[in-house]
Amino acid sequence: MENTSDGYDVFDPRVYARGLPHDTFKALRDHRPVAWQEEYEVLGWPPGPGFWAVTRHADVVRVLKDATAYSSYLGATQIRDPHPADLPFIRRMMLNQDPPGHGRPRRLVSRAFTPGRIERFAATARDRARTLLRAAREHGPEVDLVRTVTDDYALLNLTDLLGVPAADRGLLLAWTERVIAYQDPDEPAVLDERGRPVDPRSPAMLAEMFRYAQELAAYKRAHPADDVMTVLATSELHDAELEMFFFLLTVAGNDTVRSAAPGGLLALAEHPEERDRLWNGEVGMDSAVEELLRSHPPVLSFRRTATRDTELAGQRIAAGDKVVVLHASANHDERVFRTPHRLDLGRTPNPHVSFGDGPHVCLGAHFARLQLRVLHEEVRESLAGLELAAPPRRLVSNFINGVKSLPVRTRWREPSAPPA
Ligand code: HEM
Image 1 (cartoon, rainbow, N blue to C red):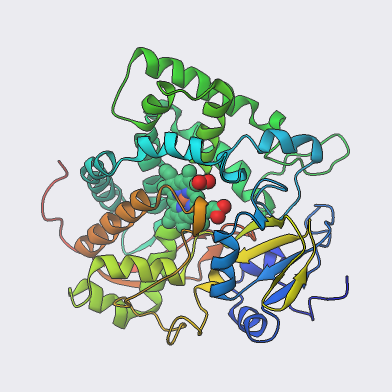
Image 2: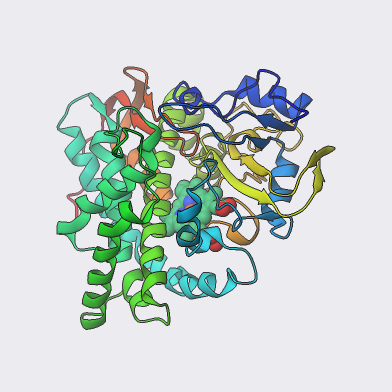
């Protein structure tokens, strides 16, 4: 390869556990906007062929919009190459398909995410936020908001929307943690007979989840309800597609909100003047939620594969090369955002790419925004102050910008009314 990383490393999952590497992102945006990254052996995972890291906003959007040149199908959408034997299986997920084939499943699932169904959900989310905050209050002025509020908030909202019975919620959590947190040494690794980590996206690792998806679908056909699994189970999706949707929604819908919720609260704790503007009503909740998503994008990267020889920002890319877009860098590109490192909760317009762009733009964005808006409204009602009691712990991952703990010191307001 004629190009090198020039010492700038945005691949190492451990980098992100120290916070977003903004200096590296900026250097890459300025000097090597499409930069070659070595994919060396890390945390027991074997080396890979390397990839192009795309850091400028305009180029990230270009890659995400141009599925003809940058495929989600060829090598799927994660930096690490799947085992070739697993590729046909992984490609059954719409996330890993290209237009025009991607359009059919996308339309079918979109039917389950109607604005009406999502809006009806607001009252449930509000009750849940209140209940969790009241319970957190019992811990006193110092509390970990991840353990007491945000982890459960994201998971329980998703299981409600999907229609997963309360008794099975723990299963979902275990499955999604296995998939998302597999790079983190805090997570128990699943090893093969040679002691190498097993890819959590392989069919063997997902068998239990798929069996459950079929059982739940059968139950929903017999007991239809106002939830996403009922819509999917009674649609024209085949069994294998249905399983993959369940997997996709479980992972896509949980860890993203589990990251956005504490990420936003962390930003408010770190910027008391902006937090006051929000809590006094000087800035609106909608623009605040967007700015919090811009400054703390839950997704760090998505991968595409070049379908042909092409060029991006002057860099030649060969057919078959991996091309990885870095959302956090695009969201801080000074070519698009004035004072990108300033948290400005009133920022408009705010063309951040936290939900992606192009044919795969997030299907759950409306649901995610609603959850975040309701959570921040209830936090504003419950808390009179918010400061960090200790540094947060972050996930070791180059995919999800996870926050594992958020110890804060706060003053609780008197509750205004008991939960409904
Ligand atoms: C703040 C929270 C969220 C963020 C930041 C987020 C981010 C993203 C991003 C960046 C993509 C694009 C993937 C790509 O380019 O290949 C995506 C796709 C997707 N998201 Fe989200 N997401 C969030 C919440 C949710 C929720 C709550 C759900 C569902 C309950 C969901 C369901 C999906 C689905 C199904 C796709 C695949 C769409 C397709 O392939 O056409 N997401 N999300």
